[in-house]
Amino acid sequence: MMWQDFVFMLGSGLSIVFLAPTLRDATANVPLGTSLPSMGIGFVYGLTFLSLGMAFSAAGAIAAGSMWALIALVRSPQGLSGRLARVESPVLFAHDLRRWLARRRSGGLPVEQYVAADRGTGCDTIY
Image (tube, rainbow, N blue to C red; front, side, top):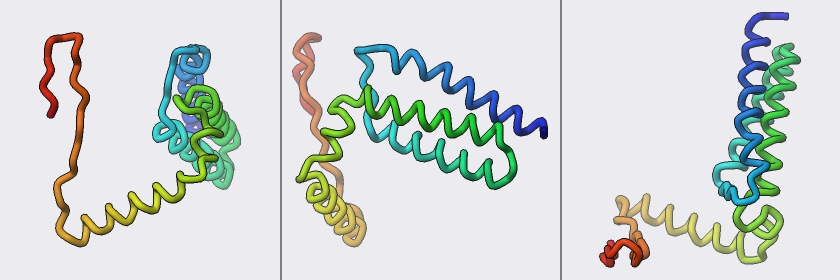
């Protein structure tokens, strides 16, 4: 076994240990925008390590990707199945993509952002 294989496996194992409390915490909300890319990266790294003959690193990366998949399934604010199965989701994505492309072509119009006022602190200004 190469020492690098062991180091990568150890790193993936530590990430699993650090992610476990998120999976156990019933109040944790992890956006799909965080968990799904992390899951994909774990699986891609796993396959890459496997192609390099680094079986321990591959197992660790795939395990970390699986942990992210569980977090996406269990700890997403709207739930993975509810978020991805919505009929309008592809339509909204296409609309947002068209707007983004139009902004890119026109030189980048400013993005509108709205923040809700925090009434609890006495700061009622909306930016």
